Length: 231
Image (cartoon, rainbow, N blue to C red):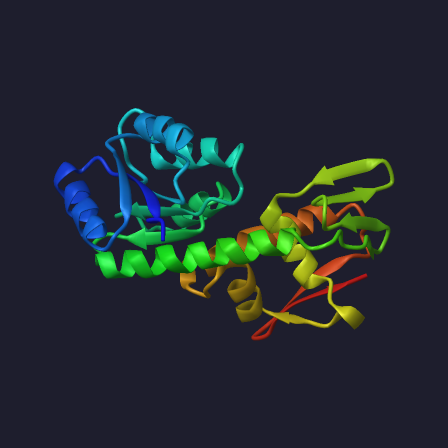
């Protein structure tokens, strides 16, 4: 079995080597980078299975690395490793396409659990994209194409991110049934921790903005339950 290849970008030298040695002892292959520029360079060269990025790094920070990766890669999981845990920082990270957020200090065992969880979710997502083309979904006067990740209203076409499209598809339930937050978090993010919950809130806001072209469409927040899409 091939080793899981993880790109670790961390500018605290002693911490970086401790994490690398601990991961290599557990049969991971580690690409160690001391700054964001190295991380981008090594990502392009080696195509890791997952990235673990410190937010505060010299030259190029972790947010910028994630942004550059997500411009051409929507599936490789990204974990931010940082001492910063303010809500605005967490939201900013998820808006850039991060999949998880690990606050310092942490145990290597916790990092490994999250790595494996994200990689399992990645495989599930890839498998689902190989299914036959899905039918168009009419949401009010908006047409949603879940295969191409686009919605169209009259002549206006909006391209959704893969995660926006997956979320909208989950919300398009038969008979406009509600969907629980826990279900959405488990199916799309792989777990329902607080950081993923913050990310879900961001994506719900984005979808409401995308669907605003038809004023009859409402993405309702049902307190204590989840969400319901009605039109």
